[in-house]
Length: 394
Image 1 (cartoon, rainbow, N blue to C red):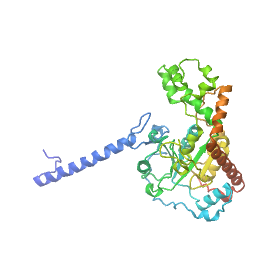
Image 2 (cartoon, one colour):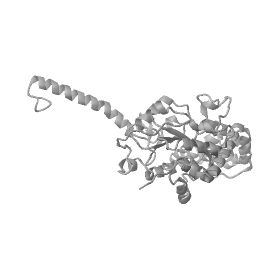
Image 3 (cartoon, rainbow, N blue to C red):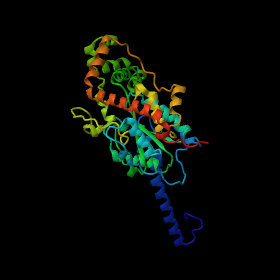
Image 4 (tube, rainbow, N blue to C red):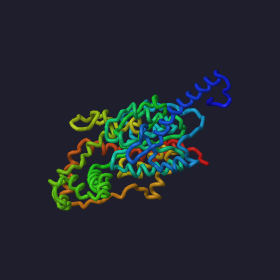
């Protein structure tokens, strides 16, 4: 029996069989790739390891917000302009520096990278980005956990970004808990910029302790498995169930299995560029880079001034992040209601001692706070001359 009813001769039969084999080969190559792009689990995406953390069905089935944009328009955004550097004097303010950068680069980038520092408002920002992606017509991608809190394979990460963005002409906000990294714009073939948000050490320490004990994925899993007492004993490094006693005991809190050293968060801002090795900040000599540098982070801010941070973000990205400040103010967007710890003397002493030892992180934090406040005040006065322009929306 011939594979096609119109293959009447032996020659036609042979050609048709070759054609069938070729088609099947192509299908066998394409199907695993397509499947890997779609399959997701609670912890990790298969193969291409980038996934939409907003509701997958909503994004993929919404005709007004498709994952793949089949427009034939070529990439025509100019490359990042570095001529702004010549306009900036060594003693220029943070506001003047950002203004010069935005004037030299009036077009918003194809990709905004946000390597979220844990427990620094990142879930709130994630909610804001997800909500705005639906109204402002951009895609928000969250990276796989296998790139989080570790040294990543940069080439592999860039390759996966290429796979998910090469057929889509829309803009992207890509986020995840990875250490700060500068990606190869030429390789990915997209213009890209970076933003960051950090938190003061004292509130960060308390938040990490509370989250780890009561609100983390591990705590939730222990509750489901009815092993929460054992979980707390393990995290607090105690052999009894009188947890309040531990919070009244400085030595007990000091010896927990919770990582709450703020200096270990510095890789989210400067990674190898400030002296860290490829794995962790332990036993490394640290030198902070120039933080007032849009080539590293166009916008970097602190959680204690979140509204000012959102104002500067919208100045830099008035189309992609249009309405982000109003959305936060009107909806009071906040992702997580964390368990609040009682301020016992032992806990406050622990927080103060840890804060005082985090010399490098504190230096970095206060420098970032100074940068943000200066940018905010400068841009409020010079908004029309500095901020990128918002396009007309139908």
